[in-house]
Length: 195
Image: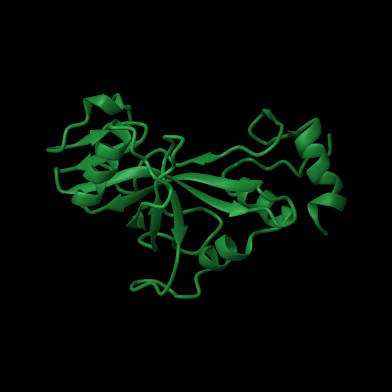
């Protein structure tokens, strides 16, 4: 079944669906992962422009841990087959080496973001609905809209299964059933109610 002939997809995007979280959701929304896995500090975000490169720092988009580990929020999309460009989206965290982290910040600060610029990045979250995703490698592409980089996971993976389902689902897309499964994995079960 494709989105074109799936009444759940039409209802979800038109009038929305009642969710187990108590809200009614209309259309796609990102799943926000609050911090990199293991973050020991406060979960209160500081402003991005207060960034410190030594010690610990956490904002909505940037994280520095012990002045040695550098992460930023990334967009990790799973395209909905038959509904392009619609995508289920994680707003997750990925780690970068310091030169790439600083290079991105410089490009953003100076208005030089380029969608062809990319850096090696490692996912530093475990995504519900998948086998262990921690440390999956990929490439993060700058986004000219100034939003978080786009993370594409690719193999082979040195510490993980080279056939990890996140890799194949990001490449091949997912169906509406899988989309609802992934929302439900984050306590957004919308199939319990048909209203």
